[in-house]
Amino acid sequence: MLKNWTQIILQKILGFQNYLFVFAAFTIYRIRNTKYDQEFLHFLSMVPDNGVIIDIGANIGITTIPLSKHLPNSQIAAIEPIPHNVRTLKKIIRFFGSHNVIVFPMAVGDHNGRINMITPVINHVKKQGLSHVVGAIPDELATQQGEEFSVPVMRLDDIKELQQLGHISAIKIDVEQFEYAVISGGLQLINRFKPMIYCELWDTPQRKIFLDFMEGIGYEVSVYEKGELVPYDQRPALNFFLLPKRV
Image 1: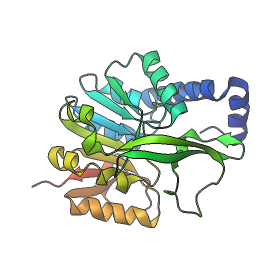
Image 2: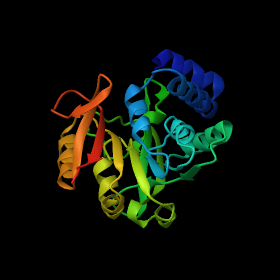
Image 3: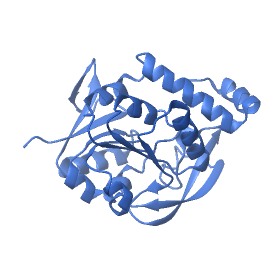
């Protein structure tokens, strides 16, 4: 990852919007052409190329584009609420010619309406990857400085266009402590399709609550280790693989 001083210089020289595009293109290249982010690459290898993949927290397209290119016969639904991220996401989709991506410029949660979000500014650097719902981050981890937005929010179960795309085979979730609300608003969809779920979870009390809930609705929790998935046993981890239990 770029060091803080490098980010400061690049954001000032390029402008924030151009910086996001360059950073997205560079990171996508690393993922597609090196072994960078092996956990995500393992998830990518598990997804069948014949359905719909929902990228919740698509950000600036760093996972959206690899999904699109690796799964050309699938439809990618990229959900992202932060305006400057959405602009970069659409630009990077055009740049890579990813015609199988549909962008949903909104947040998803447990209700329909609007919600306040923030892109934090840490040590003079805008951190687009840490954008989150106001109040979702524990006080001891949250930053009070940043750019705030009021964005539309919908329940996954109420997004008609999403329901009409077809069989949902996988979901990627990166929503900075808002996972439970996302799943709560999509239980009908999840119970109907039983998609594989790849999710980033911080090591906070909310993690256990979320994982216990997912196990309660029929999912097994695994983590990636040395090239394979192993059952989660409270070992240090950030990314989790949630797979429907075999009947």
